[in-house]
Length: 359
Ligand code: SF4
Ligand code: SF4
Image (cartoon, rainbow, N blue to C red; front, side, top):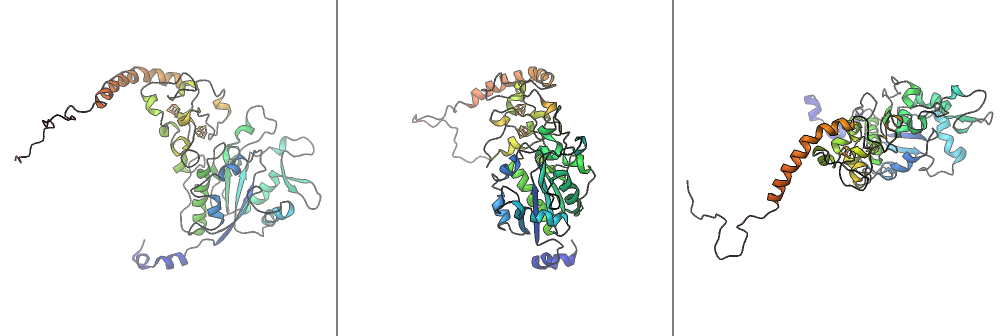
């Protein structure tokens, strides 16, 4: 910041920013998808989708959200109108959100499509998702992949699937840059954690307003501040793990690594953040982490309820240290659970109080 900048009033600084005052969000959930991410974001409280759309968050551009579940239109052609305008290059600027994995049209022999969104007005033939991606992604100010299917292929892309589907970066290229100069923004999760999505969207919108830098992403294009730590690092059962105290079944409140938890090697913040308003989660509340945010999901984590590869070695190594420490802590814990002997109602004070000052 220069000396001139310091003298500038906040209003003047705001006036010379180079952002947008209004932006459209074109959300297509016609990938190989269950709409679970669309449903999930309605649970966000910080911020809520309503607050963003109604303009209640200071400093954000005006938002025009087009999502088939969340937007109040009668549907059909009226709903498709902004998508068609954007494909013609008549809608600027817009953020393209894709939900669901991207099928491989090239493996279809003859006519047909795996999934479509609206029809071609000239021919009446369904327009495949791939057509929309080819026409919209190069024109979008930013491109966002919502959920693990759109980011990395997800469950629909598992071994043995017939569609040959993939994540958005596999389709557009990992080096893809949007009109706004941004890489694809991947927000994985199956479904996406509500506030993980809304927080990232809000950061992007501040960037669109010209008042924030671009959100920092890792090499898998995930927001760093959300996916930079493992499940295990934020799990409140990690104290049991450290003491080598492992659950033998799913009713136990202890560490679940031996009954299928992949938390130590999975990038996700859900146990630390909770699901809705800090409530819920996965291993923190008794559900093994199945790695649903990860590019290798689901194949590399199946069968889910078996002990993960590598977990037996680390738990064997933890055993001697963990059980010794647990015994030692047990002794100290019993001591700490006793009140001091001067807590009594006898007529003699035994707390050690001495009214005389001594140098
Ligand atoms: S339950 Fe899973 S994430 Fe939690 S401490 Fe155990 S291994 Fe780590
Ligand atoms: S903790 Fe594991 S199962 Fe739960 S959301 Fe995160 S990655 Fe998915």
